[in-house]
Image (tube, rainbow, N blue to C red; front, side, top):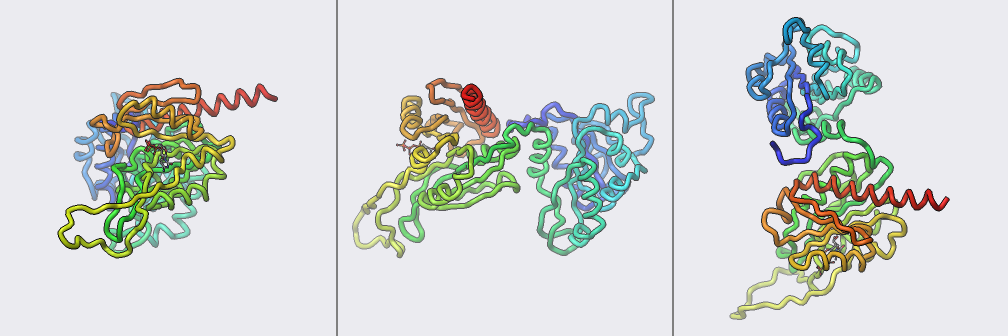
Length: 415
Ligand code: CTP
């Protein structure tokens, strides 16, 4: 099983494949779903079988593939009714202009269209087609009809298309489709919150080609931003340079390089936020005299000195102006983890601090996993064993919810 935190585990997913060139990519989606512990049942249209074969999908999913209108399942039961009964979510990928038009207009003339109309579970359309078709009034009107009828849909991506042109119409990435599917299953319990997350390392220049930075990959902060958005919060992500794809496309992402740039971006954006989560690894020092030319290794000198000066402590600054915002910091420690973390929590006026031992191998910097202890203002600690960063992010957000609930109780008692 994929170690990622997932709502897809043990879910029955119906994957409907229609006749588009992107049909071959669906095989990768089916594999990713089975790796996440979902049971996948594939339904194909006749046109889909021009591009890919049922055998491929039967092999990957481990389940029979449905493609005949009157296919019988388990004895005398009609296939689309059986699948409707067991399904938790249905995804049509790729969704062509044809399938969008048919279902939007109530045409049920094959297994897939019948199934999409017979089911009461969420149905997600993942379109992929030529740009002109995508932009056509008919496709857009049909999509609107589907949305009005409660169907879910995704926007296609942009790039080179199979028809030799370039533009909007590409199938979204497998990660984006999985994220949308997770999103559909997730309770929107942070819907009224606006969360600012910082992530990644900052970078301080020595000269135009060299810099001081740290080993932060940004994965923890990106996971917090993604899960917060999945749970319905509005998210602004302020990030140092990372090698990660954006966690989601539906959040504001501001890229910065230095600690000062991060500080300025945070100060510009924190005010409308209700929660601030500072997962960034901010460089504490920068070069006092940044060279505007590359430093040359002159003469025989075997050493060089760099004079460093302190960077702003963004979290400490926020602690002074936070008012009733919830402020959460991370403490990256290599020794006396809890003592140092509690000291930071108090000094920076935090509501929660997430302490982690970055010296422990297999977790922390660069890893997909982490092991943390969440400490609140009263000193109570919650130890979270090694889990994926997505799952840790979810648990951190549960702790944030608890702080919100406690506040609500105090406010209610007050009135
Ligand atoms: N932080 C910050 N600005 C800094 C340094 C740290 O906002 N200049 C934030 C980090 O984002 C993190 C928290 O403060 O949420 C703690 O960071 P950490 O590096 O563990 O500790 P420092 O406060 O820098 O202290 P030290 O390096 O001495 O451990």
